[in-house]
Image (tube, rainbow, N blue to C red; front, top):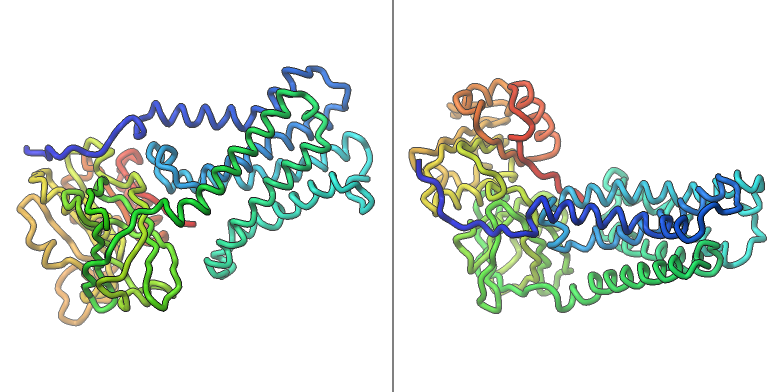
Length: 443
């Protein structure tokens, strides 16, 4: 059996060792102020609930600062985990940090047996903390639910960026009134953590948008189906673009007369085409509905690559791809890589689409070698359709891949509901979770 001799772009940043290092550093930074406070001032005279309340504030502030780093799209943070895992962790820790900050005044009130902190006659130092807490109480739930609320992404983006005020207000509140910050080690830790957070925020929101993204020319805009377009990007510096098959990029289009917005798209071209990037984009929203109006000669700023949804990270002998709709794009990148590198491992693709007209890349898929099989599953088949119809169910998966389910690794990409159902179907077919690979990237 011939396998690829293509050298995947893997390094120490992708290793489990680096993942352990990052987790360890994260925990140490988060707990740092509270640990230093206990170490340098053991056995405080305050009631236990008060001490816990101060520890909650110190830890909550540290976690809020770390949120800025988690959201920064740094490759050193993304590569060992995948950006979807990092962002899901970012959401969870944002909620946890807000709970700690909310617990802070409640625990102080219970410990001191006084609710004066919640009155209107507190000093400005206390009011800084109240303002930070108010932003957290409103901003965190809003950030987690804005999609369900139907709020426009650009409105959410502005509000979310404004939550840096929690860091500024919390820093000043602690600096001027926090008893633990009278300890020099805690005070300098507090100042250092704030300074690093501010630097990361300014780098991400001022430097990167202006100078930190690679610039590309859009050299081709091609309509691939009735509502799908493929765009080709060439770097202005004529350099190479390293990535692994299946990864994605953030693209900010520069189109005359149109507002510039950044969106994530899969890199559809295989990594062998290392002098260009491609994205196949379906018209499915306010922005993507205008993608066909993009013209060759327009420009784009791109950050790439991101994600771990790739055969590069898994030593597999047989490969089963399952796609839903435009979720074919990262899978197509991997298929093209397997073809272009002469890889002869057995590969099967089960692809659920609405209609026959939605089958992108059909000619390309059906011209692949004997080691490749494709099954289309149409949910809205026409009268002349003779293939599989319905949805990608356990029965369909078993029917078309039964001979490889015991050993194949499954790579899945599609709409969230479809992915949930397919994962349940694979488990029903006794496919080990370790052999099911997918990414869920949501804001």
